[in-house]
Length: 198
Length: 106
Image (tube, rainbow over all chains, first blue to last red; front, side):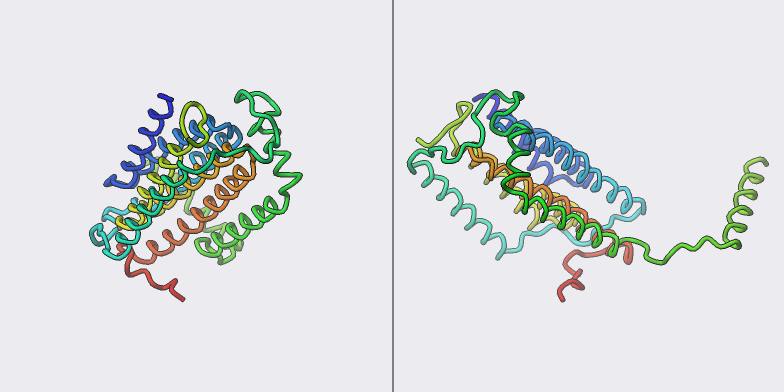
């Protein structure tokens, strides 16, 4: 019980730090802390595979992407963003209303009858053991046997994303290595070496 | 009282997920830096994932875990495309006000 509250405090504080940090790189660092704490929560909730995916995909891939983009954009001297942070009234009011609705729903849920497990794929067991709820075997069987179509749609989404990124940010002019270009590159390299020698 | 696990009632997990979601929402609304806005959106994705996993645990049904897996995939695709858009926008002009980026309105 106490570990949960420690993790919850880490989650909330790191989320607040992410949102309020002045420099985006500080946001990335606090978001990394947030993801690590969230992976711990997943472990408490018997979602072993997702805890590992959280670390690999979020911390390993997505945050590295953020770091690379920050490095790319901040290589200039001027700050990239114009204008001050703001709180627009209508979205803020909508968010406040949604918060109240959420809390009310949660309070109602407390008084709802207790949840009874309906469809157990595997029995609940210690985290880290095979063939228990949330283990890699259990998750893989559910993913590849009963829910194969969503998995295939996932592959399609990723492929569309890759094509979209290449179309958006890629240099689409084909690179044709001609003899003239090769000669130019060789000459430039020779001159650079000579300059280095002086 | 509803189900509890590891000594913590499900309500506390859900409250944590909603708090994280609205911290992310506040960041996405209030911040002007597009990178921080995107990171706030990631926070919201993660809060939704936490809710999915909590309910998967409560019902002992890993459909929620598989949905969280799909959300992670969509978040990865979203981050890649959004960062590509950010790079394209900021490559064309060194200083941009995010409220003025309206070319994607259609």
